[in-house]
Image (tube, rainbow, N blue to C red; front, side, top):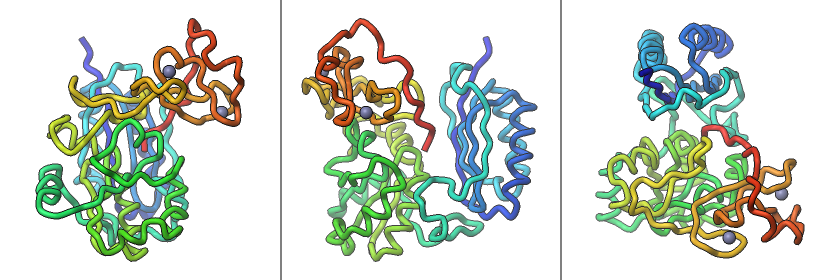
Amino acid sequence: MTVHKILLFYRFVPLADPEAVRLWQRTLCESLGLTGRIILSKDGINGTVGGELKSVKRYITRMKEFAPFHDIDFKFSEGTGDDFPRLSVRVRDELVSFGAPGELVVDESGVVGGGTRLTPKQLNDLVAEKEVTFFDGRNRIEAAIGRFADAVVPDVNTTREFVAELDSGKYDHLKNKPVVTYCTGGIRCEVLSSLMRSRGFGEVYQLEGGIARYGEEFGDGGLWKGSLYVFDQRMSVPFTDSAEVISECSVCGTPSTRIENCSDPSCRELFVVCDEHAAAISCELHTNESTIGGSTTQSSGERTPILAE
Ligand SMILES: [Zn+2]
Ligand SMILES: [Zn+2]
């Protein structure tokens, strides 16, 4: 039986010629039959690719031969062979779209002026030792179904809204307190923690490997509560069978971790829904009384794919 794997990775490192790296990555992935998404910028690489185990291993070997990528921390997850319909390799202004490409400073060791890195164990030790505030580095809907205990959840629908949110003064009371940023796999916090530090937040930490790695180590027995939002068809996953359900259907209030798009195909807004209301969900803009509580026999159809962070 063929084993399929998904590889997740990123590396902040200066790339003198991202366009040349793009061409190389495209050829490399095509030759190995890998699909998925790779983003390149002058600041590095962010990728999620899937394929057969032996191809994925070969890809890693070739990546390590390229000096800027030789110490990338690759994370594996199980694949189905059908995870990504195609290959996309693009050069963009930013690896993660904060809308602040001019602010980020990157050198050979990564982001300059970011937060202090914490392993999951170090995070637990820090929390046991002093009062810290968790600061969710993800979007509103991601935090709705799972977050660290008592986390501050910024009011953002996209990563692009973080800069304005930080500049609003809402979180200035945290500037002299220990703040721990976290996100799914760690990449958004690389940027977020540096944006926070340059805005006067004095004691900023970032969870290395993100919630994904924390969950691997501590499951639901640590400081994490709820389910993890993921960027594939599953939308959300619990770490263990004893995961708490902290979110509820936005129509009827039943505890649920299911996420669906607004039923209007032109709208991308995401909502927590129960199974009964999965097909009926509609945002304020698209609310139509007749659809709420209506037919549930038909599925909500195609989900808008949310790409990896
Ligand atoms: Zn409901
Ligand atoms: Zn809508």
